[in-house]
Amino acid sequence: MGPGLENMKRFLDLVVSIPVLILSLPVMGLLGMLIRFTMGPDVLFRQKRPGLDGKLFTIFKFRSMNQATDLAGEVLADEARLTGLGQLMRRSSLDELPQLWNVVRGEMSLVGPRPLLPEYLALYDERQSRRHEVLPGITGLAQVQGRNALAWESRLELDVLYVEQQSFLLDLKILWMTVVCVWNRSGITHEGHVTMPKFLGSMK
Image (cartoon, rainbow, N blue to C red; front, side, top):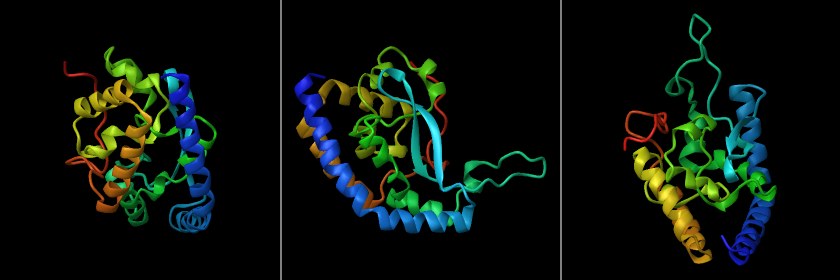
């Protein structure tokens, strides 16, 4: 990415994320109270994720699952722990709102490949690893082309295509398409899963 595009992306990130973050504070406050009442005191989900060049940072999301366990004390599967409030937040993408703070801090961009789990780093092939040549995003090309309904190979290929084709106009297009996808609630789940199955490595 050239310095001109990098500066334009950063300007777009700040001019959008700061006002949206401020305007959404009442909604986030209400969600925080509802999460605390229904799921316990830990309102935010925090997890280390690889960002630019694979460097780890802490991502913030609203919790959408409780900590229910079985008789042996093992945490239940995601499907069993996802609450009604969590489902609502995921369908509307409200659980992603705290990531605006990651954008303000420069750890994420509005648009880019979604930050995935650190254990996936060793599973990517050389081409798939290129997704870490740019900042991760709240939304991206894969999210507007199918989101969690895509197979992993297709999703990661779209991430790399974004890296190869990125432009300011493409970011604007993806942001608009994201609004449409959220409105239509498309691609929220993968068949047989509440989100996506684990990535087990390239099938190539």
